Length: 490
Ligand code: GLN
Image (cartoon, rainbow, N blue to C red; front, side, top):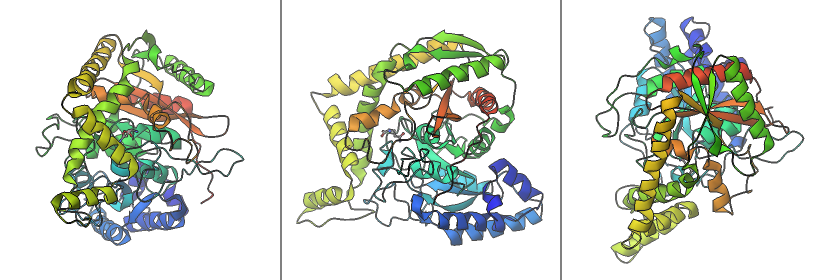
């Protein structure tokens, strides 16, 4: 039944509707694939009983001809999303065996539309990282390997489990989150499609908070169309999130395959980073050619404050994180350390529960928010953020979308950058700007590098214009003809 796992989400939905196979069958096939792929460490919790119960309920609805838009399709959920009665860890030890008594809005929307939950996916602790190595559950292994090498590579992060599971055909699609690149960078490193929608498009309710002004949920999928199908279900106004936008959800899949003729595509010169591998430069140039061939007008644009984005992000994100993570005190949920008094208990709980990267962020965040440093760091970073957003506003007066590389490198070896936080943070150089400005951005696989590893292209669009972004991404996908899959070794 392995052919059922190699289907795209769109094809699987068609097959389910036409009753060529049941939801139980396709769910079983994925559960078997997951079991056989434990070496990837993509899941922190498999939920087969849950999955089969949901699948059978879907089959009943499908038999009555009642199914909704995702009816019977098995997917995975990043463990940052709270799932009712199902352990949700955020990749951290500190939450222990926490079982939320509620469901995140995004996952609730997916279940409302008939999707089936296969389990919870591994991730960097509290979504802080670019390689999945900060997870309390150990790193995820990228299904891709360099040609002729047996070295374990990272799938990227923080949504490494989501990306690896999609790339290895363990799920038809997955939820993920992106605060500074955590959907797009792992998508780029695994040959999958990852979408970070406009800030406010998907509700943050029930998603464990990292940096609330930057966090957005989105899908990782096998194709642009699949990503559009998933995002349509995940999106929508939610009164439970005050930053959720009260706008209608366009029919995203409808935009995939539309002509891009006459669209103006901006190429920002500041995204030509020093030391960028020539192959990434070449893929970017190819992307420009593909869009030109599809009838787009290519326009050189400037985003002059780009070079300040990474430093601003690494002040704002830790500042918000230090505040958001104050709630993990061992009192209401998660683990509790031993101590003689309340302060000792807090200290013991946080010392035991948080990993090193999370502690680093809390220290940085607390420092930049402290009296005396607040103006010099945090306020300054907020001003930079405004400049970056203004750069995009100016560029979008002249263009309809931007094209850039997604990440400055292909997948790297586990351990390669974990000792050097700055080297790790540099992974986010092309992605953080989009979060700072609240824009939609997505990664589409473009080509394999000389060693056979996938590389992604990023499309950025105006706020709430995911439609145009999907059209451009669809054109790139078509031109790239990227059909490669990781060779199975697991
Ligand atoms: N790599 C970035 C960080 O560690 C982004 C993480 C994310 O998008 N969640 O902050």
